[in-house]
Image 1 (spheres, one colour):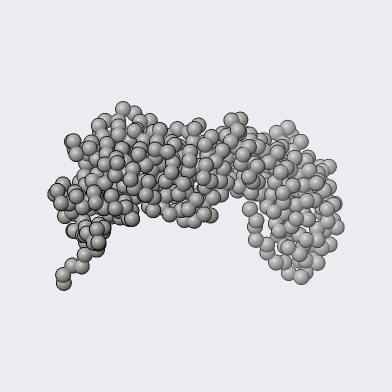
Image 2: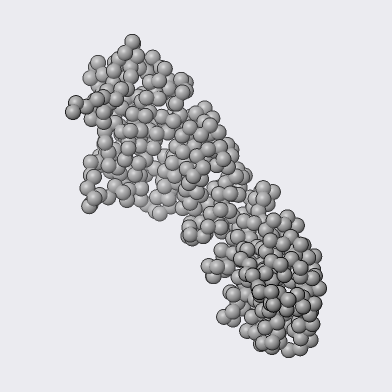
Length: 485
């Protein structure tokens, strides 16, 4: 994490230029004597100097070599001799100096890497995690920040850090009981990741790191770096998404699906980064598990796991609705085997259950601000989204239009045109679906016309919403009506 540089006055710069030659001498006491506050002050002077870009660009490698020797000695002495609190302060200052040296300087990154700073710094991280001294988190945060600055824009440094930290050290750092340290660790992980490294995460021996990132996305949604890791790296790998999904609890799956849905909403284009194979996998998962949602009708959930399984189905439906909302790269789902049939049949079951007795699937007319429990229902908008998915799958697709007719889905959708507080916008989605079912499909148009002539379909809800069903030149149209003023 880069830190802003501050400008130094000309006189200070002259002094620092001179000290550029003498920092090795300044550090000699840290190498040969008992640690003392004067050594800390020498390090602080060096750290301050490195905040200035002009000095940072001209510092000689000998100064870094001396700093490396100081850090190496601290690594050897820690936990064995001397004042540990002072040692922690000295370590933190070393890491600050290293961190500052790497800001926007590939030259210094390379020099620091070649001197062995990565090895000695990573050696100290486990020690800092296990000590109980008060200053441990300050030193730990500075060390992780250094690794982040070292890795930015430098592939060799990224690879070195990854090779020595993955998976165990990353997992440890993401589990530290310090919010800043976890945030910095996530920043380092995000900086190091690339397509090949993401594939490594999907292996059974490594996937705990991915699970930890997803756990942080759920429990710490304010932690931007973990969300960026998930959306910019994880979701782009169908292999990792499948591996995570199969190894997750239903509660964890909901978090993953919410991130996918948010990514689809945010990008709204082919740039969303979610590969088609993920859409295939999620469609199959919806088909396999969709029956679980019916258990909510009893009102007596046997376990939290049963509830979470049903909520997973609901989240899968939400994702499929977003994917088929005119995103070209996912419209192949119109031809996904049995997806449309499964959705129509599930709508039929849910609708029948809701009519049979009063339960979570029953239509309601409770729109009052007080006492409206629909907002807390686990199936809020579920029927509406089933209809939305049917409409999406039938858009411009004659074969699917015919399938819905054969499955007797047309009158089923028409029967859901009434306003329902448990399913906000269900009437609008029903109108949308009917439009897509009637478009350029004479048989569906004739079916709706015959339903109207027989009086088996109630069009009052459509009329109340400002639409009329009208025959014109042998075709049936949904037409907006003009209300008399």
